[in-house]
Image 1 (cartoon, one colour):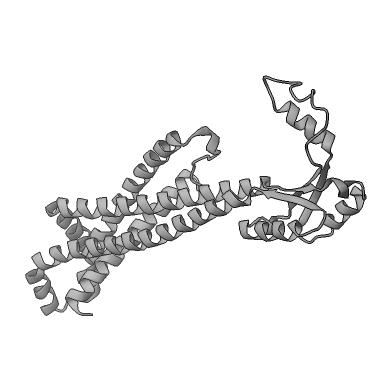
Image 2 (cartoon, helix red, strand yellow):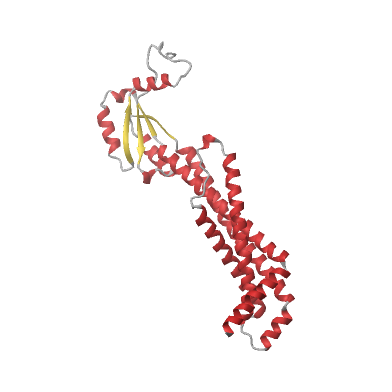
Length: 297
């Protein structure tokens, strides 16, 4: 019966505190909501952009242009040598005639424009697709530099230069997300703990009386922890709404050619659950930090 009375008191005391301090509770909830929303949106942006970079990396090919005098020496041998390289997944030979056909096809409004050429100016080439483990921009650059040193190679072109710059941008976004996320979490804990501390100080006489009559620290802390958890739950719901609106807004602003399907990798129910649990954790920690300093335990 005593335990039941304690539980009833704890819940009723927490509810009364929330009713008496709606502004402070709302401030805590909004703080948790915005912090979780901003941090989660950063993660979603980073994950989506990383996926796009990976897809573009799969499309990246190294084009090796062959010197004219080397073509006569035997294409099969050159292709075999490239195929034996550990970085190479496949090699496709494009002859001078095939290159001219591809270029001619690319002129939508002027098919046959190049038919008047007396001599084909285009070089033969190898189109090389690299293995997944070697599609990192720096590894592509190293591979292109190695192949470019072969005496029969005229020139090497690859799409790794812009991918490398893009990868640097991703690293910057990742670092920014970590720093911003850490700042938001610390700021949220600070605001929640100080908000609850104001409530604690407002009721310090009541708390002192409870301590004098032998109330345990757990008994004293419970209503404030419930208040912090309530702020966390509401904050998680606020964060979910903000993330939903943010995804739709950012998705509508992305150009179609960017090939970015801006979506969360988590299902909506699971994302909501994660946000609520994160809010509960932040609220509980904020309350315990505040009470720990006040009660000096």
